[in-house]
Length: 106
Image (cartoon, rainbow, N blue to C red):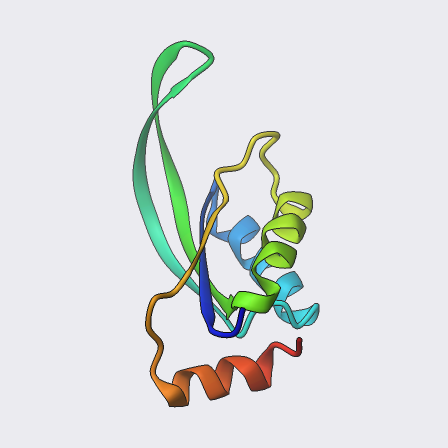
């Protein structure tokens, strides 16, 4: 499948988010990581409701490399059970896709 893809993933802090983003950039698996800053997370973990402060990251890649990004991010992430969610983009501007494809070799 040819096109753009995105991966969403929260991290415990900005330092671990930056480290993962840099590793994925070094591996040429993503073209960009938008580190969004502090987010409040509310979730159920081990049967109990919990809250926490995390840092959200949106990774930009190609559809061709989506599974590779998800797998590598799972290896890099400091959580035992990270929330890594990826999807194919329904639409992408031609210039954006050209940049993605040039940054993320297939």
